[in-house]
Amino acid sequence: MIQDFEVIGRIEYIETIAIGSRIREINRLQKVYGYGRWRKLKGIAIVSFADGTIHWVELHWYEAHGIGRRELKIKNYLD
Image (cartoon, rainbow, N blue to C red):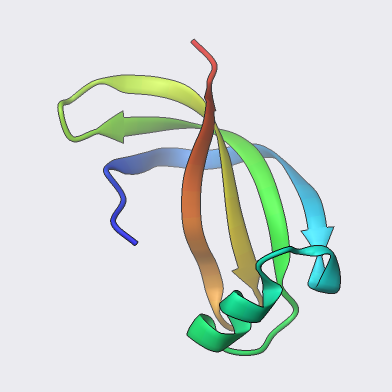
């Protein structure tokens, strides 16, 4: 997956949205990245885009222990 943005600093206010079988994409995640304790999370961060603009955004992503953070998506622009 190609990201057209870069997270600047830390992701804050992290919340778990779903764990394991509650994730709609669990079968695809396991097939592509491997088995693990998958969680879908959301948080707020400052991101920089390729054109140089900077925005506060709400991010969603998947994460599993030993595999790491995968498929960051911007869900909302907050500024």
